Length: 323
Image 1 (cartoon, rainbow, N blue to C red):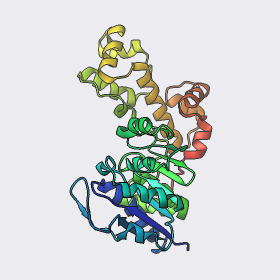
Image 2 (image 1 turned 180 degrees about the vertical axis):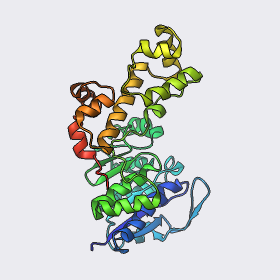
Image 3 (image 1 turned 60 degrees about the vertical axis):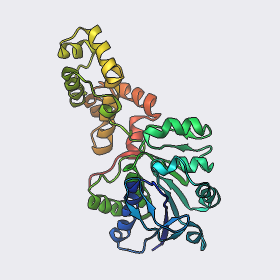
Image 4 (image 1 turned 180 degrees about the horizontal axis):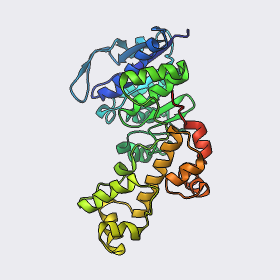
């Protein structure tokens, strides 16, 4: 079987999970596929010396970055994030600028995208990063097409992921591409994670994307909406459940959650429909009714506006058959 080299870049104040999450996926994938040598994994820092993660964990690299590429570029180069990306060593940026373009696949986890952007490697590409850093990435590197919503983005040989654990999702997608779904599923089960959250799944669920209301009636109502996307979720009906006038309810909901009731309902319904299309074999018409759209045409318009694709096309891309 093909042997694929994986090189993980280390630096002081790196986020430890950005390193160990993808590393554990690749390390387990070869065993899952019946070929322990499917991936050879090395870690490297500029000088080969130990680094300390932001949480204080000490990591000892296998080698220096220079030695790591002496015999050729890696198949997959992983650049993690962390506090150390805020003021990176110029020598690290120079190394990335010189050697990262030679890698077969270039992968960033979390704010590792900032290092790639500083090296000019994201110019003209679509990319994502941790939601906290998306505005910074877009503002400081205007030539990068920043998409703040998905948990990871694939753009040719370049892949970028959102915060921390999203690096595991991206690594699983790469393993599935390399070794097949069964190997990725075995690793996911071992790590007790989902096999594949689709890359364009939002970094936040509807409830996390909005603020949690302070007042209990509105907070309970938020939960009720997520549990009843197929119901009558008009402002009048929701206001009655909250025992407020429609005008007072709409104003209070926006103040406490940062969004309008209508937008919150739209996001809940879209999220529910996406999950049904990904995880079940229910027909599009049935999904539309279950998600509160009423008709497949209404759902199609919502999907096209929010995701740029029709529900049927979305299912073809992201449906994971039950095994």
